[in-house]
Length: 176
Image (cartoon, rainbow, N blue to C red; front, top):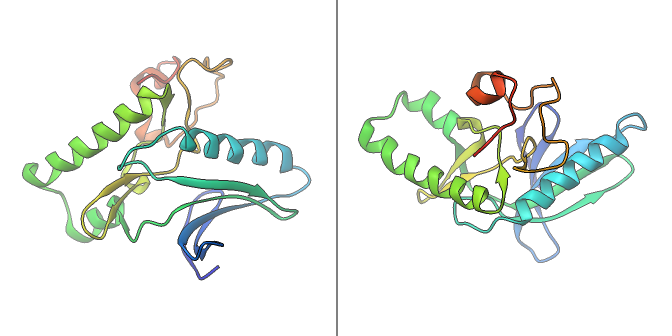
């Protein structure tokens, strides 16, 4: 582990070096006896979902692992910053600036949906702009298969409330 580069509601993200001497992003969730099974299952599911998608605008997962204290996944390290950070620093984007971003994200989502998945938490915090300009969709923690068993609404909202799809707010299942 080289340095902490991010933090979410449940996990910390570190820049680390793997056994092949690559810089990777290591997303670690703390595990306790009370949450070990549920948290491990969730992280393994996120890794499994990500591993199914291959697209230049979707982060690449390299693996998942569980130890006594943590469960985590390691993925491609994106040297850049989130769109949220960019927007806070620069302010709103012009139509000319926003259009290619929208195209890249639509292509990423088409690849995700083409694998039968929905992300369910699209927001500026989950999109990185790599140095050089490439946009990368990340964080599939709320993702699921479109036709997953039990994917019907549970009464529990998953994702960031401000960014939830209208159908989810209406009590329906998330859809592409």
